Image (cartoon, rainbow, N blue to C red; front, side, top):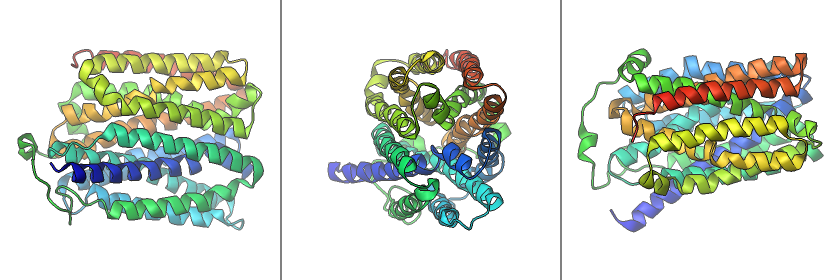
Length: 401
């Protein structure tokens, strides 16, 4: 393939991931602070988060991924554009002080559905090209995306410290309108309206049958176990990110400290994702998944023990092992182990059960624990989730190479 064209595709994909994750940090990482500002309790904030994540996992995303796998007119790119527009419009309505709390909550749920639903489509846009023999560097794009998440989180923390919480909404809307435009222009490979590139992968020509969710899970039992394990592990990650404000306040920090902690965690993911391809060449997926299990457990344990913000800042460096290498590992696991006809569905199921169902149930339970008992008990809960999920992931990937 022409190096100049490949460089163009990689740069374009970096832009997609960067805009998505900067927008994600701006509006979703701050949701606990914003909802508390609007008068919600921790339990209510957790319920709103759970409602959006569960709606995406059980209703919205399964339907969209099935359409994308079965009908080429409903491409990942087109779904991405539609979700960007919906989230941007909802955000503009929420910016108004006249927006009542019930409508505000419903629109936050809609934004959550769009955010959770969008990530698998962005992953599929990359993996579809890889399966066609176009070596898009997913790790590079996703790594730079984490860097822009850090930028968004850092800016969000200082904005929330100095302005009304609703200041994040016009910023988010502008970012996602740009993401919609960038998605519109992402026309490569066999995507609708795109330019078909050379060097197709012969294996990609295999005609597999698109399956329903349950049939797919029955066909791939190890994948089903991996999903269950990641749901538990990411429930702990979702809790600590959603309620990071309480972790930083317990350690003597505030909103700006929360933004700094989230930014550090995202920044350390950048080198991890950029180096993933080299790591994959030198070791097995089994070993990589083992590293991620260790990272999840130690991160949660150190949050529980952290006596100061210094320790909190050190702890978030463990996202190098946690999200940093586990996210590309799961994406490549699906590309390697799930047939082409079910790639979108496979990416969606793994993402939605971890960032969707797992995070939803975790934040729902943690919100109640916070109101009833406190931060200490919440962090005990995250440790238990990371241990149980980690054991399942190790069992699921014990045969991977």
